Image (tube, rainbow, N blue to C red; front, side, top):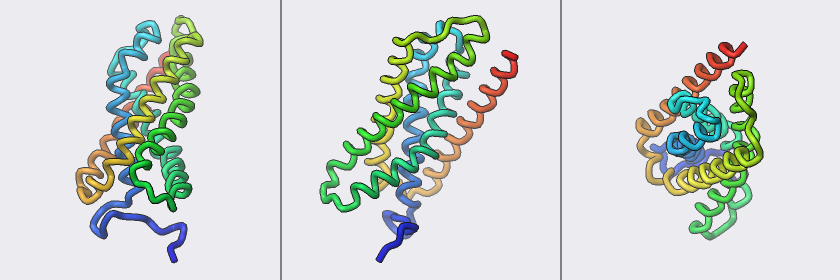
Length: 188
C-alpha cells in the first residue's frame, strides 16, 4: 500500500515527477513572460523597461509555480489518480493552469503594476488592461501546465539539466525580487 508521502518517479535514477513538473512549469512561465513583456510594457504606458519587467514577472511566475503550482499538481494527481486515460492528462493540466494562473495574474500583476506606476505619477490600470493581463496569464498558465504534463517523463532522468533549469528559475526570481525592492524603495 502506498502512503500519501510516497513520491512517484519515472525510474529510480530520476528526480521526483512532481518536482520536475514544477520546474518545467516555472521555466515555461519564464519563457512565456519574456514573450509577453511587450504587452505589459504597453499596458503600463511604457512605464517599465522590458528587462526589469521580465525579471519581475519571472518572480511572480516562479513564486506561483513553486507554491500554488505544487498544490495544484498534487490536487491534479489526487483527483485523477484512478483515470485510465493518459491522453487526457495534458488537457486537464492545461485547464487547471489556465484557470489558476489567470486568477493569480489578474490579482497580482495589476496590483504590482499599479503600486509602481501610480506613485510615479502614472494612471492606474483600467478594467481593460486588467482583463488583458488576466487573459494573457491564463494563456501562460495553460501552455506552462501543458508542458508540465508532457515533458517530465522525458527529462526526469537528466538530473543535472533539470536542477540547472530549476536553479536558473530561482535566480530569475531573485533578480525580480531585487528589481522590485529597488523600484519600491526608489518610489518612497
